[in-house]
Image (spheres, rainbow over the protein chains, first blue to last red):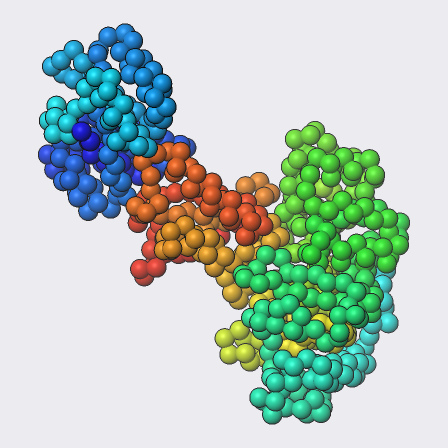
Length: 143
Length: 433
């Protein structure tokens, strides 16, 4: 149910993002989804990759500060209002979304949204009760 | 040109040395009788007050250090019972415990006269309106200057520090003629005046007496040009008395050190050996007349040199050069003493391990900026921006309360702080004085 996400601390200066993606590319690691939260000084890059363990190892070896977090990948109908429905039911259940980002599946009518919750297990229960599809880690890594 | 106490300030050297010896012998005897710290220190050296027969015997006496003062917190070094103490001050932000100093009524009278000496030397008279923009409180700057200016009979405006626009309004409306603050604050005032479209030359300001942080000839020129005033430097430290240890006259050629009250030496900070006049080294002061808080051979940590030649102004007291720097790693930022170890303590509180960090001091316009760069380890890294920023704010908050001034935290990537022989350079001071 849970998907491994890697977060990387980046200083807000030219070339840092390129450096991370170049290292991953050289090691044959494919990025499935990413998001970047930034301030004027620094940024937090969050990545879903096809091989999280290897990605974490090579980035640590290259001297980056990493975090490994578990997130949920939720399938959302790729049509107007699709995301709104999911957010409404999370809100109704009192679940707080810490952050989220999206990517579109190549071979389906669904979008995939990555969610970060404080209480992941509670979120899983709420979403499953409502019949929302939560993707398995392995499925996401190989999308 | 006026001189506040010409009978002392222009004394011939022979008479001065007689006076110094007489006072030194009395001071040494007093601390031996009254301060256990000195009795023990003398005993260890098998020294008795009667061994001090001439001024040349001064190096026989033990040094007193900042650490000694900290260990005696709060009243261990006082030489009089508290009922004789009428004022207590304390050092500005230092590591661990602050240094507490006390004054008897007679100490306060001496202090006022010594401040009156450098105010007079810097051109202040009873006709002046003196705006004191030093903080009032435990810091000796505000009250020290206040009583000295009152002693002269000037009209004193005790504005205290901060609220720059109000300072400028008072300066305009109250027709301030003499400004007392730190040199960086004087420059900052001139910048804010420019923003407010106030031409400093239309004010009544005539002289400025600046101290409590190191500055340079270049800064003096800027201040004098921008504010259209005569700017003089003065020196002091709370352990000795506060402001009023030394001050420049209008010749601006060294600070007259009031050696009838404070016996100066310049030593090699490594060996402790006394250096001849003219050589640069650490200033060591012995208080000759202090009653409540006398100190023998106190190591100030300030680097300077002494010039015994009489000044063109007529004063004969030895002149010290501007303070060139410090023997320890203490930084003076916006008039506040900052030790890197204080910043280290705050960083240690985060997760118990000390991250690689670097302190960067810079001057933006006229104000000193303190930035602390911290290399982010996995222990203090979050995937949520909210938590990451909360951490930064928490450290900034702690630094503000520990240091007494605001610092900016900048998170940087691991290994991005330059290393020197494996160790990061802890302090980068980019201020061009």
